[in-house]
Length: 382
Image (cartoon, rainbow, N blue to C red; front, side):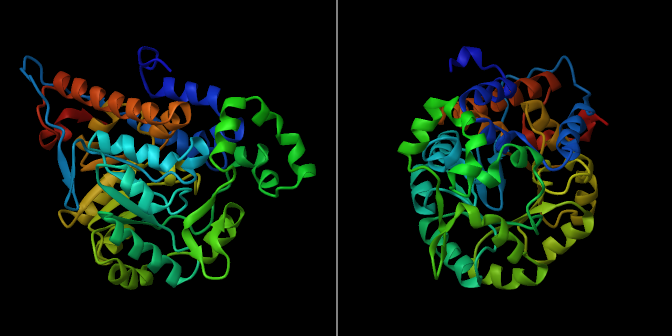
């Protein structure tokens, strides 16, 4: 993958599609049900237009910011992407290393194929742990204690996953059958792997189908991949859980999956140091509003009580600028870097971050704005 051939995130998407099997690509690329919300996340950004200040000299742009005491070279975090090791060998460690090299925080999914200690050791930047309450309370507390010992900067609790969304592409690609491990049901879906021999060799050398070493169950050890769906249904996080989560963690906490002003207020009351407006990239409840359209309601609800971040549909640095103009403090990207990871590992993730950073700087210079702190609604029109 020559950098000169990768101009934007869509180029990384195309490269990923050519590199990994269909079931793996669609795991990244797909959404829930009819994928309405996933498309709306993108179209919401496209509907926002800029109002630049021309004849303004902007020799340099300062992208630095801070969230929950965490310094960031630019207002961007890498969102938790479960099973990143399926995209590329040691995927979570590779993505974290690329993030750290750019001064970008990396959020590790509960469903990581790599040990959280190894991921933290791989990055020179801040790492955060995303938490699902899988297993019993003791399992979650153990995971949090390990993360605190390893030096994780904050906890990110996801609240929008009472059950896994219906991702129709996964169903059609044979995800359920492939997880059985039985040849007869798997057979119709195996050609997609044989069509990507390079990925298959790397996957097998990396140990094949992963378990989740950070979810250590008392009776069976690390959680098996096939057990995730059932475990999520039994482990719904509720507002009542935040008292013991906050006590067990004892550090900064972000709450991810906020859709409404009411939930934003409850998140702040529960002790959130920041809230993340997120619809899981359109992968959970299809038909909810685009995150960018929900941002004003959340901002009105929390006022100055906490920082507000946003994810969903971000493919260009100009999208990040739009989100900041509309009041977000920072953004999370998931698919944008996952495409890069699937396509080319470390260099792909680094290229995704560099594309977004360069886009941001160019956009801000064209707007006539020197720092992210100066971005405001005056620069955009909805």
